[in-house]
Image 1 (cartoon, one colour):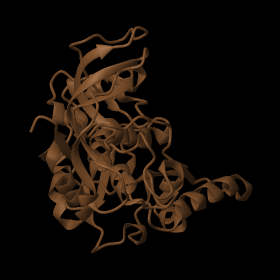
Image 2 (image 1 turned 45 degrees about the vertical axis):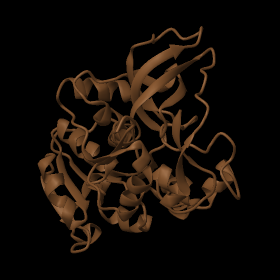
Image 3 (image 1 turned 180 degrees about the vertical axis):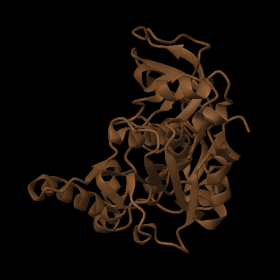
Image 4 (image 1 turned 30 degrees about the vertical axis):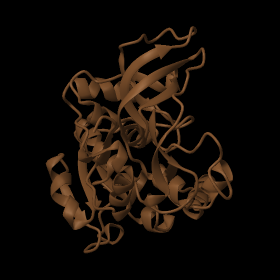
Length: 325
């Protein structure tokens, strides 16, 4: 089968189209004909080997054997099942996040049945492949409040990216007042998703406007936690989706110390794990209440170009890969 393979850390041209053996499913796995996949920040980080902590998990000097094919989010058709698989059968259309196996930038991939859900009936394979990682993170981030209430104020930092475009829509389903922050060229798209207010981060610092929010969902994570706390109401919640290790450690430390100082504002990390809530997202998509935003679709052989486009940061929503293109 054809697959995009990388054997060294580096820029997008480090990944090459190659012929590799077709994977065989274990007794508790499915073999999926990958119709589409999508790019996430983790693909970029693993390809470039930055931040360095990823090398400790996936190979210090070069990617470990078995981790040479990137791509976690997929949508496709089940071609074969192991004897212990009970949820799916050949011919079923599925989607999910293969975070433990990877291998989505290929014509075929294997996955445990728990990593997959039936594909939304009214979405294309490209749209479905855009959902698993970004959609789940957005849903988990919004749920950090417990039960968000109508009329509450929600700010989404990085609202024009993969996670952000889902988060805007999910927050609006609860009738909240949503503010989206991103680059100027993404503001129109954020507004079209239902955001009540948009902020160009280059023109205005949302932590210094005097506005206070019940939830700040941060898809960037590059500022001090003290900055974000200024934007929270008493009892408000800051939820971080990814971010550099120093910021994560600062969040954990301040959140640990909060109860000791009587701090009512909470700092939380979105890290519940992959695919948790994916079935809920499928229901929302099938009901027409949630629409995956796909900026551009590239062919399998164009993955280097797609990754380069991702690295530029100009995309709105997700970048999809069509394995048949």
